[in-house]
Length: 264
Image (cartoon, rainbow, N blue to C red):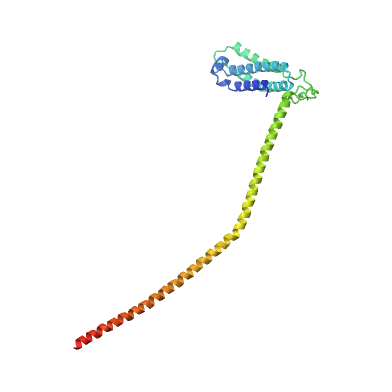
């Protein structure tokens, strides 16, 4: 980016935020409610700025920068021509404190604006042609960034274009390197996912075998519990039978002893 491009962009940004500058608003307004004065002052400032850019373009040795300045001037001229109808409508409105002569002077100023805007040099030839690269009569709004002369010097590579090409190539190489790194990372992730899939495929039969063994162990445990319960039940019934016999013998012995005592 050249110094002229930086100055042009800074000028555009400053103009964009001029409406927030109170001092400039006071200087550009005759009256706080006079819309014509505000708009006309803005148009005058743009015309003055375009004239300065045209002078810079005429003295610029770098053809690419001169073409860029002329293109900016043409865009400004087109925008200023769009403001003329607004000024014409505002000039017809009566403003408090203005006489009839001043209103008539405003109309004269507005009528002179188109010629002043068209007179700003923008790199195009003065006489308009019906053919070639110039704007045609039926399409006067179409403009080209060049002045219509496409000689060998126009297509020669300048230092600025060479730097731009080198910067473009460097950025392109960096982008390619970044894309290569991303591609390698994606390949690595793809291989890892493939290995994980294979490992899962190998683990599935093992998991199925473990499930079968767990089911078999659960079934065996249930059967063991049933047999153990039956065994405990049988042991308890046989023990009760022995205890019953012993108690019966004791009772019979006591009965015999009492019978012998009573009999004597």
